[in-house]
Length: 241
Image 1: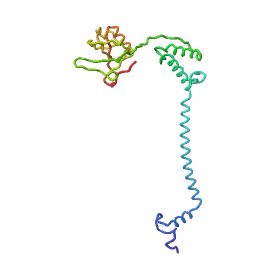
Image 2: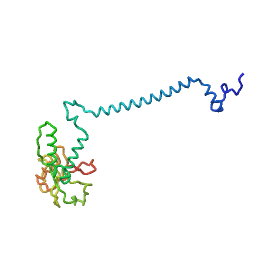
Image 3: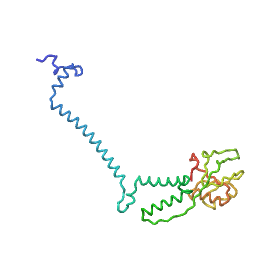
């Protein structure tokens, strides 16, 4: 007959058993059971590791596939020849041109040198037809900070680069005082401009033409100045160039 102190048959809660009794129970478990638990734990770890490696492999494969050219090498050799290093080399050449032409590589001082560099590269590496096309580009110089104010019905002084911004195809910067204002219906249509001779033409940007084209037409119509007003939804003056 077993006594009440027998650790195997006691009704005492497991957490309240003595350390010696708990150790005896652990030692009494079959070795095969402990091996099975160890194997199951290792299997779960291996499954988690395999899942992580699989996801990493899929991500790496997608990245490699996305960086490959999308066309055939023989049909599009230039696409395969393009690389980050070659792009940086070209940018370095343009920077060198700017350094030799008063910090300019387009429009003003260095535009001719930049064009010649591009032509030389096309001749050396391409088999395309090369030709040059001339075009007009507005160039101007800022002599002093511009001012814009309204004197009637109340005096309002607008802040440069906060309330208004000048455009690079502006005029000579002459002082215009006391000029009347003419609101233009559509600065892109000559018939809708109205009489702007000697007046400050106020117009809104239109999809029918560029700001330069509208300003040039208003100048040809005799406007002493042109002010473009942006929509109220814009909270800053236009920096259009």
